[in-house]
Length: 90
Image (cartoon, rainbow, N blue to C red; front, side, top):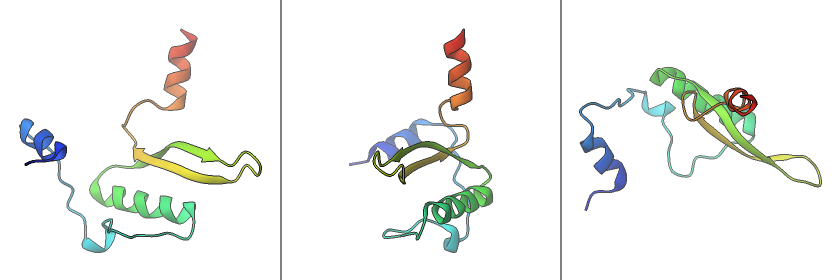
């Protein structure tokens, strides 16, 4: 049985599959020493694939304000905070 991604791909006339070197691709168990290193890896991958990434969300520990979680997305995904604020003002 096909998964949701397979179903989505076959429902489209065209879709983009980036051609990126194997050493730039994500692998199961991939770990990073820091959030900066993580961002650098994904941004480097995206650059080779023909797009860029941005930080969508992040979470901080309330007690220390230490960032412990970030979500990286394609730069075209959703709305940026700036776009959202402009819409809210209208």
